[in-house]
Length: 488
Image 1 (spheres, helix red, strand yellow):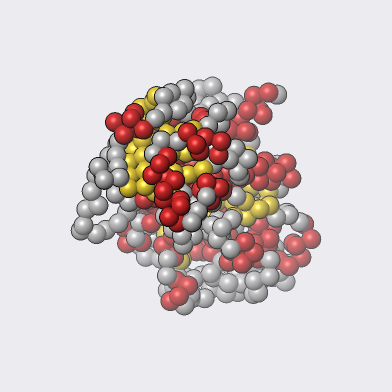
Image 2 (cartoon, rainbow, N blue to C red):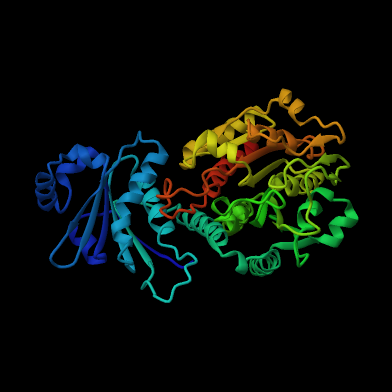
């Protein structure tokens, strides 16, 4: 990603217009009377029957005869980050629809000027990124430069670029059609990324996993031809790192449901069932780009859940990598199967924290809809940290309890544990209790069930339906985690 930044503490109509024809003005209410383009703004508000206060709920766009397009939005320091991001997304949308090469962002604020500028720059840049669209028609030029006016310092640009890159990698992978991102093609993509970015790459293919005894993963993968499923490990190392973070991602490149076949309605979009792995890769990308002083192992469970003579079926009993036997109840609960063995591998390295990402359960979406995601952690303090990170990043999460008494629902008469139950009651809770059985050693662990990875009208900062949820959340949590560890 190449983007040029320009900065000027002065902000007025002359300097803004000299820089670009596409202008975003972000201002606090007390600056309304001093805004440039004020006469045109007052006329538009009067024509629409609006007042200045209405700008806090809905941006206003002004078109000038000389071709300038100005979008104005009123912000408040007390606004939740999600609301601020949503408002900025709405404000920048008409500017980005014209695919400008340059955008000028003018900030009228006092103490929060840098924070508002950062968020406006992030929202602008993340929504200007090219995503996989296989159409002949070219959409025109891309954004090359952002001018920031009314701020004294740009000490956050590297962080913003890294976050945008991580989010974009996540969205691009998730949106790639399934014939273009099979497990083998996904592995080739990851090998290329690892080579370019200096990550270590290791693949546990089907033969190796069979030899290790990873029966839960193999059970799902055995129904597909070719047998190209694998658990991929990407590793980033920093010479000053004192902590290791393990990222685990569900990477089901297409989910038919197996023998419990999905209907056409619910199979549509199932190439995006690998979004959890894409989040993990996006987080790794952002950490690596900033050269953060933490070691990261990124474990990706890449497979497809197909139907066929060799596919696993109800009432099978398989043995997982940790030796536990699992009674298969529903073949469309494949995500927890591939994650089980992957979590065991990840935990054997004894990281300080494991975060897993998965589009795992319909019951989480039933509980929360697609505006928030749910988390379940084995340590209350970790759950609280993640909720706070969600508030700070604008990627909101709700913590559900990791309650031991739910285990009785997974009791099996024939095996150590049931994979799931036949009904969907609290399946998000049961899935987390199931996954927790496969973590060896006492490792802090948080499961993130990505019920909000896609939202029809965009979500928070991001305008596309697939929104890259989880990348900003994790980077915000990691910032706090590293700071807290440094104090000890």
